[in-house]
Amino acid sequence: MEPLLVVEDESAMRRFLTDAVATAGFAVVEASTAAIAEQLAHDARPAAILLDLGLPDSDGMNLLRNLRAWSTTPVIVLSGRNREHDKITALDAGADDYLTKPFGTGELLARIRVALRHALKATFTNSPVLAVGPYRIDQSRHEVTIDGTLVHLTPIEFKLFALLARHAGQVLTHGQLLQEIWGPRNRHQTHHLRVHMAALRRKIEPRATWPRWLTTEAGVGYRLRDS
Image 1 (cartoon, helix red, strand yellow):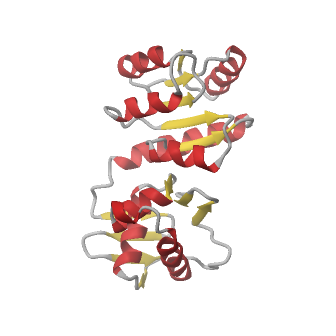
Image 2 (tube, one colour; image 1 turned 180 degrees about the vertical axis):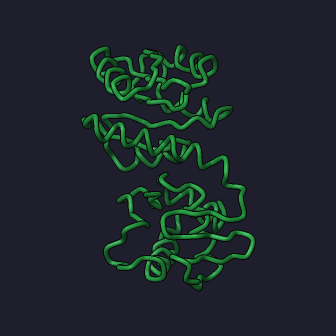
């Protein structure tokens, strides 16, 4: 399997990250600057990238945008910046996940597993039928079933659910969802999104007020859990 690329300039934190992922059985390559990281991302073709935003030669957000110009490798941003704005900016720029420091080894490894599962599933998103948890989404017939039972969704609800299913396990920001479903002129119309998400939850969740699958990332967006 391809290695994981750890991009972190602080030596103690970089050692913690490399030890954590190596103990879990992953091969590791390391970078302490954006320039080295971009070169390693190209040469080593890592399975996933753990990216700190505070790099000495360039802001990690710039590196993320550069990577997304040519690579679909999963990127998990690791940062001490915990404002919602920072999370949204990173996710909109193409990060697959955002983990705020400090965090434990268990949570880090769980996020890596989710990112790798998402990357694997991305290979199959062109399939007409998607399966996530108890849901089966037939994209060609615009049908959703839950444990074999057909559920009626409106066209907008179906588009939202299918989009989330194609990115199961990944956070999609309000802006990403609005742009994909309603177009770029509606990127700030979050009330549209809330209304449709509430209706969608009432139809697909056993208890809409305590969602098990379609979860909210407060102030950021939504995630359809894949397990």
